[in-house]
Length: 80
Image (cartoon, one colour):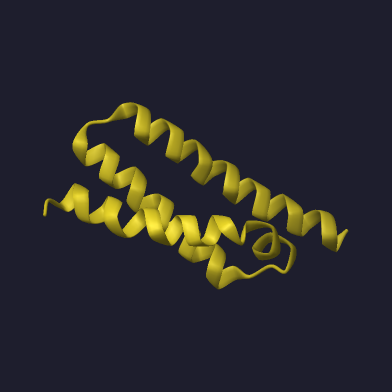
């Protein structure tokens, strides 16, 4: 198994498991699960980058940034 395949094989199940629980993760500020999500998506981005698939990097990298903003801004909204 290539490193790219290994990253994708680990990243997708981890990220999807966290995305299924996304709203409670954000609402309840579950930092550990958020970190798992970000690590999973980061592995996906790295896997696509190693394969040279720019579209996969852009799509998944955009979600990585969007998820970080969502988690951060939702926490600020609840605190204020």
